[in-house]
Length: 183
Image (cartoon, rainbow, N blue to C red; front, side, top):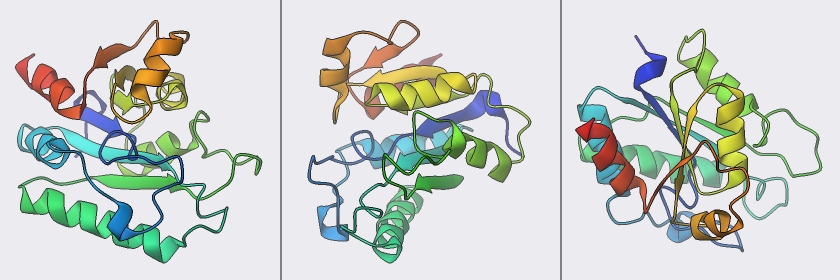
């Protein structure tokens, strides 16, 4: 059984793995940050559920297909399991920015998918961890507490400053995990 107050929802690119302005288009380009896999495993081992909400417009742009994305997520799940953890659900948006879908962050559709997949009535009290304002906006629309990490586009987002009034800021996923598990 899942509990919203013990749920951490992560963005993928820029939080778990290195990001690229040219998109992460293959398993070879999908490179986790040092410590991120261990951080997810530690959360799991401490009774937290971890889900992922990721915009993947590279699919709509034709840079890679859903099978390639599945291979990246299979590897992510494999690495986390090997470290002793588990990912409860991965939700992704395959659409482009002009497709008008409900799932592309900052819209909350991916979080609605996670809420439904985990059988929760609400995400109020959950954590959303991202490196962009759109990640935090999607979470805040669903009642999540927001965390900006400085990895990926996070430093650039922090420099802009606006929209971060509710967010806690950490250097990376490991630093957030250290803090959360010390509470």
